[in-house]
Length: 251
Image (cartoon, rainbow, N blue to C red; front, side, top):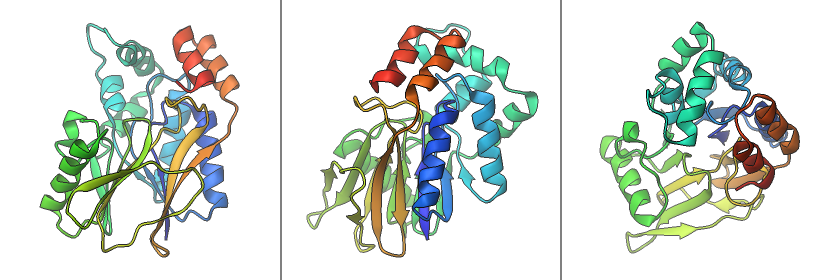
């Protein structure tokens, strides 16, 4: 089975379409969308519709922190994501909001634990951004379900892999896009798969990962899409030049 892992779509339908087409070309047979379908971007309704169709076809879809913000926009918006939450809320239908509200925070697929942020108190949206936070997430998943071998998440908008070495400590590995990484099942692995809809590492290409459970390989991908057109949808929606430039520059 080839499991496509997509996270942080951020209302960017053009990037989502590109990643889905790419994963299909790689032979993806199962799909997991790891939260933050909305927020920042200008196409929340289209992205939610797309994810609903994927869920109807068997995809796993999780809830992220930007779903919670869009469902319950804060009274006082101080951060960029909070400002777009009000705009997003108004552009989602009642049925779309109801669907987002019932999405789970975590899911399991065999030996793979799926979460938006950290398995350590998922509703607190903790960032997995170093060996310590990765270790806490992996331990939390395994305390609840000891046979978990993989923890897959997003939230940080970067592609990183951690693995437990022979000494018991987690080691960090920075992947090269398109190069399969052996992930033998006798080890424990935790990955952040990057962002489909809003890159933040200086590369404007969309990001996702593909886990081949038959070959025990994990491949991180970067996918070209029309990020200039996506930026223009943000400008046309009046969401601000900073968000548009982020899509153009990938930072």
